[in-house]
Length: 408
Image (tube, rainbow, N blue to C red):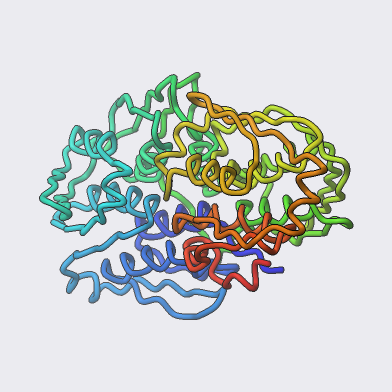
């Protein structure tokens, strides 16, 4: 079993490193597709990157930085793109260009761009080419739309310590994925900067961060969540190795509470989590702050003793694919019963006679929509019903770099 380092923590760490133009040794690195895009950006900016596998050395090279033409490219990594946009906007004297794929443009960046321009940066889009003229960002107070993504807020939070004056963010009452915003604040606190939080208002002072020379990345709990769901469906359960800091909370750690609510036994130690299966029961699950859990929870719900309802799923249309339609299309193919409302999905468990029928089922190919989270979810179905095959597994590389065979 292989658990890569957390993409969420790793990308935040690399941005803080770049803001400080520091060198950094990284352990438990995740060399997935998203991180390779960010690596390319760091290289273009002026970093030399050494190492392979789960170890990397990031070395800032002044000459490479001086020679850089500041041309960047983001195809799939929405987090990296949004974080890098604020980073470039904060660099005085630099005019940069980012080629942005249609996929990322569709997923959006406007609220972040508007905030950066209000702080003095210049951001212009021409086709797929985004031009950024950096400056010392002014800071100040800003209202930020947050009904689509938390990454706009996180991008500004990571930039805040390096602004001209303190930053105050007024979060929307409809802010989604607040746990990821909390993770960004926890990363700052880990290195000596504590934000002031009053209700929906976050105040971040300009302050020097104390970054380490070496950093071990916490285990990726999105991957752990997949293994935990697989263990809950297995006859004997499983022990999953993990490394995590108490100071950094990942959104997908919520999977353990959900499994307990379903009736499974979850025991956490310092270096592992043990999942023991039981007769699972359905429940209601709030996904506003942990949307990436929706695909695996949807599959788990099919094996519960009563129906389950997943709440706040509407925004999943803005992920790598429309994950709700991806799940419901697969359910239509295999004859699973569900009810889809405006912002919730109710899933009914498989009947015993259905499970028996599947033994003679003809092969069915489930469309993953080239979405790594759907690959993980559908592999849970494949583990129970080998007749259910996946349209592709290469998209798994976006977050899990070790290949499909290592996953299963």
